[in-house]
Image (tube, rainbow, N blue to C red; front, top):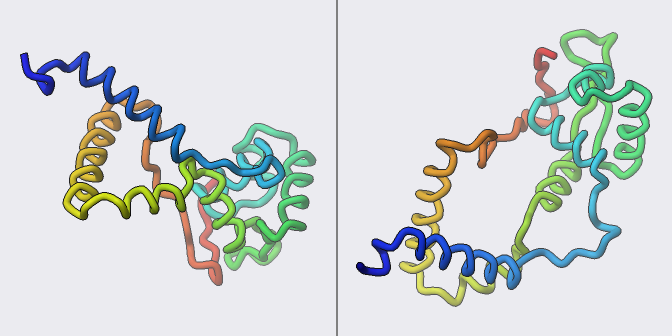
Length: 168
């Protein structure tokens, strides 16, 4: 039986190769650059829902309004969130990610070092890079069919000048 017909053997080899890639290319940030779990949860939720009031965010996150308000205030001081008047109802204030907040969330979610990965991929011929990415897309498509959550979710990014209103 050829190596490509030995599916259990291919799975074992893939696991070993994946581990080697992860160990060689994972991010090595200092601890102070990481977001807290609560901060990450608020930023991620807003990224996928769009702008919300603090009350709506608290309800969605199943946290008290005062806790979410404190988290929002801390993130606002760091320049990651901002409060805006709801254009549809000027009595309401919406919370939304700043461009810095979107960038910080994107960086925080990265598993691999972009620099190390870019350096490694530059050493592969273009056809091998293309084949690698094509094969990974195919694997993600197969896994996505049975995954409980979307593997490649699409975040909500309305234009920063005009936050959209989403139902709660």
